Length: 284
View 1: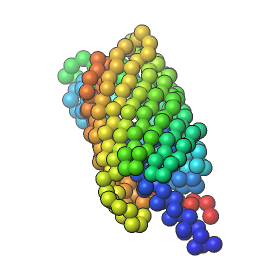
View 2 (view 1 turned 45 degrees about the vertical axis):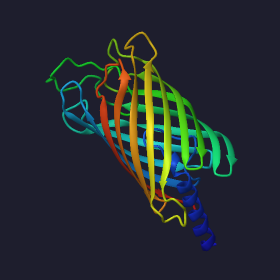
View 3 (view 1 turned 90 degrees about the horizontal axis):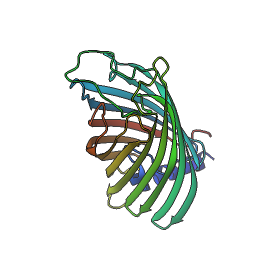
């Protein structure tokens, strides 16, 4: 029995690695993590704040649970110094994704999933530190520490041998934070969209699941505010490199910058560093 469990865990790990080019850095694919698995993740993001030129930092500890092959959930915390002078807890969110379509072929598959996310944030909408080099303006709200709210949407992912393509279309509804209301002129609704591509560069040929993977990504990330207040839109590009060690541990590096847009934003550039570890077959 023990040998069977070890083999099952190895198969789960190998299946994750052979579709590693779907493990996008800035978005989620339609595929899920392995059933009966647990992921522990720490994401660090660094932002150049537009209103005063300082460097903002956000830390996102995260736990992910593959409930079964169709359903997975994330619990995420947020801590940052972006809106206040020192790093403090901002709140948290719950994310759930359900894969409702899977069409599998040899060395290829097409999958679709639906997702929902809810955030509760304790943060001011305007910076608590008054010293600025230029007037503060921001209508780019998000559920990753900026505002409370809910979002939902659909994801479609196509795997073609070593190349994986994915697109997301979602809607966000922003709500008041715990101790602060959305200011006049800030949006309460937005449409979010993305197009992601991932390519498995190494290994050229799989021999075992202990081989190190090298994946290259480029993602286009866009948003349009969908109400009269805070109109605007943007389109960002985010290239990334990813290493996967022993089929269980992952290191992500990504740089994100704006390609075009007319939305007032806290930051136009950011850098991401993430470390993640996965534990398979958590229930014996």
